[in-house]
Image 1 (cartoon, one colour):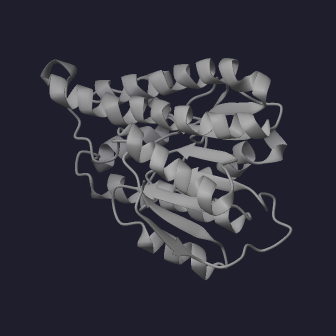
Image 2 (cartoon, rainbow, N blue to C red; image 1 turned 30 degrees about the vertical axis):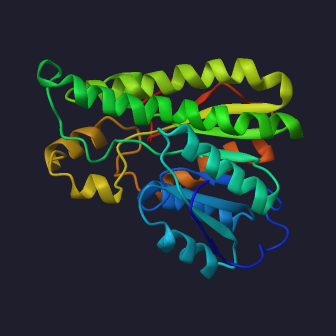
Amino acid sequence: MANTQMSGQGVPAGEVLAGKVAIVTGAAQGLGAGFALTLAKAGARVVVGDLSDVSATCAAIAETGGESLGARLDVTDPASVRGAVEAARARFGGVDILVNNAAISGQLQLTPLTELNSADWDRVMAVNVRGVFECIKAVAPLMQERGYGKIINLASGTAIKGSPGLAHYVASKGAVISLTRAAARELGAQGVRVNALAPGLTKSETIIANQSWTKEMVDNNIASRALKREATPADLMGALLFLASPASDFITGQTLSADGGSVMN
């Protein structure tokens, strides 16, 4: 069973996700923390999962009047994943929304394909791909019981257009897109929608701290966009809410690019 901590009292009524329960993985900081807070502001009760301390995210949710449950979550450990899901069921009665955000990404150093070692490849695949699989596997039965669910997997524009120096990451996000399609086909008859959200290079905490991303590289990325500016975490929140809400109930198996028009498909 996951170690848990409670935060917040009551959810504002009348919100688009009122009465829903969400799990967000990798939610201690960065995009994951933003996703958790956005869902909470929309009325969802949120299980905030991460290997790192999630107390800051839970506190931010509490400040908005939302309710959260912190869980120490290792997405590569089936027992840890099951523990977090069972904690959600015990406290909130089930799971309606899963955001598979946990990944090894912003901290990666750009490395030529021929210099990547097998251990780093396997580590990225374990977290970025198998972690998504483990979480889908654990929540699907709860969603199937209710005949409804929203699973949102974080992919990347790099999986669609390619990117040098990140072969393991690009391959992992391509696998996430394919897994999204397979899961959507398999779970759709039970009312479970599975989609992917594919950001471009986003100015998150880890990207800002990563010296591999030089100004020239960032500028080149911006130049590839139809909307020529940096992307911030706030730019992804509307797309997340769309995929999590009833507004997208007839959409499944899709990959929504949110990158200012760098990828058009």
